[in-house]
Amino acid sequence: MGVLEKEPHPMSAYMILDQLRDSGFRAPLQVYRALEKLIGMGRAHRLESLNAFIACSHMSCEKGGATAFVICDRCENVQEVCDESVSLFLAGLSQKAKFRASKSSIELHGVCDACEDAYICEDA
Image 1: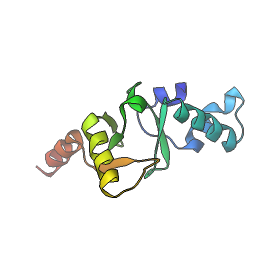
Image 2 (image 1 turned 90 degrees about the vertical axis):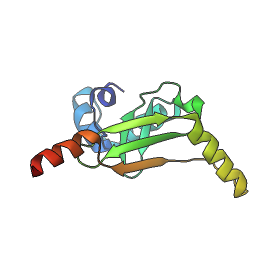
Image 3 (image 1 turned 30 degrees about the horizontal axis):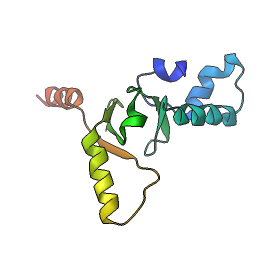
Image 4 (image 1 turned 45 degrees about the horizontal axis):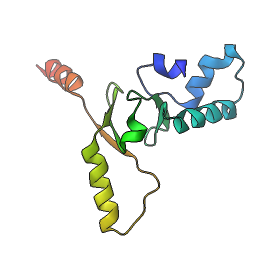
């Protein structure tokens, strides 16, 4: 878990493995098993669109319902958003569709304010 907590950007399983080799991890399967346990405990998240993992920044997000991720495509900064209104929206959507969701993942890609401001400054 320490590797994910120290890294500010999403990490692939192979990036994690590279950092854990000195600790005895040798196979990707070891990392994937550890990540699955961390995800199950609500301590990590998998970003589907990036095939990468991040540490959970809201220790109660698994209890709070749906979590959304805002991902900057330039700096790779990820913000975890845990908001009850997202959970309510998804519950209503499922109900309207007469569908029982077992999993949901919301990932918004774009450009953060800092990168947008830097881009504007470069053009000036």
